[in-house]
Image 1 (cartoon, rainbow, N blue to C red):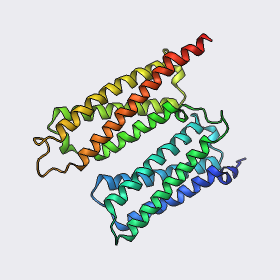
Image 2 (image 1 turned 30 degrees about the horizontal axis):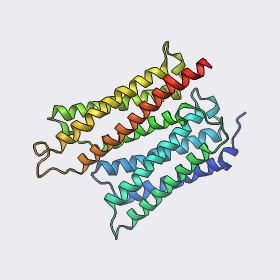
Image 3 (image 1 turned 90 degrees about the horizontal axis):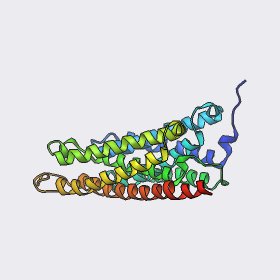
Length: 284
């Protein structure tokens, strides 16, 4: 016999999810009505709304049908992580879309921009509700500060990839190094997130926390090199002449700096947690 979870739809978190499904659907329908734009930022906005709509609807269906209790990974962890990521993505689209694609007479675009802010509000409210629950009900890795920083690092990398164009780095080895660093760190972040969701970190024959700490140190150092190399070469006159638009290059520069800061903070926190807090706990 199949049991349905009506309670999952009537709780505050469920109501926020239903609202998110409605407003994300409205956003991409309004923008699709206007027509496509030949811009990677337009594609990012559309991807965000469609991804959030499909993912939230899937979460609602799985919880309503009580299928989520049979999954092999940490369900609460992945839903909290998704809500955080969706908040960041919708926040970015709420700034990018009205800045680049609206005008005083663009009524549908203005409507989509307003609804996008409602998307952000719905997901941010879900995150707040999840973290306001009694202590101990949300204790997965992605609900902790290191997990949130991993999501932030992944999100910023996505913005960097959205702003990259092949012509920016194709003939420049220094800039190719930067793209390789962005890709490597993004891939490893995804692997860490998947291992945490799948609860496979305990199967390692060595300390998983120390491995992640070592990766954080390496990623901070690598991003430190890109923070110097990317603006030095991509914004120089030889690589970016009079016909070159520097907007996307500047976005990559600032996102690189932001991600370097996040990786540095992640490294400091991980070192403190693994080598000081955990050691003191084990000694006691």
